[in-house]
Length: 444
Image (cartoon, rainbow, N blue to C red; front, side, top):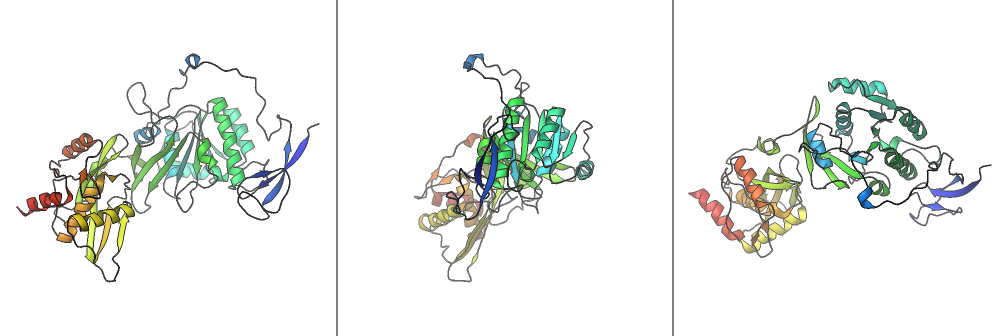
């Protein structure tokens, strides 16, 4: 006879207790502990089935011949996943890996994964949010073709596991993990307990059967994946699809990758055919730029292994209030405050009564300090009402003493700027001298 024991699980944070108490010690919430019966029999559905005893192996005896990456035939997606195939092209999905894709509602997560599924064989697409008829309608709208793609509209994890065991797919897409539940746990779908336990069982399935699993995750207001933090820890790859719903540009960014670098990004454009990879992102980001306009500067940023040319826009206006505003989009506000202070102290620019607004055109977000000089020149250009030479590409880090520091991958930045026709660069090593160099040259 199967013996059972009682444990109590907090429905808010997932903490477990051997006896009931009114308050959860972990999250300090009252009345959240729920009774849960656990079977001590390892063959019970609440546990993984008993497996044969394994022995340790030496590293040199481990063979990885059957673990070649699977290319999705979407170069920007493969780039973010990392690795390289034998033919030199970008890598792809590692067999047996489990991935998590997050993003705002309507950003294109399901569309991207449906495109990935249509390019591969042996894919099972599990949706807990749509019926198979709705998925087929979206599939037809995107004009995709994949007669072998298997669809399943289900939210019960045990049913999903049964279908996976019967179909034996190479890749399983779960859209989304917050809609999946297991009847073994006393909480609703999307709760911390359900998300954690369902993800752990899918991880065990991926590792034991070498089936790749892709989970779609909802995000919270601050942009992080909803659910327990352990969700990001137990997966192999965490991807975020970013962008503005009012713009066509989408950026796929890796924040965790056990099989490759996390500094690569994939750049897509949303159109009627879904998400299309951008072969020349520098041209796309600069195609709407106006020439000979004050406050506009072209800079070169490094994302992953490639350089991108971006437009930095700045606008200075007389402040209507006693305290001037400083606003930025796509650029760190604290860094902007620092650059303004350096311009006032080291370059003798009076910005004390000026509202300063900075924008990285195209909805791109830059974290590196290499575009400091471009931001400073855009602000100076706006307050002087003098445009920067349209063939000039500006980048460099600014120190508190006003010095212009060297940046990494400068040769790659120069090569990309010259390829796009920007053959002029700033040679000064001081912010005041750089301003004189750029705007004195413009006067001539």
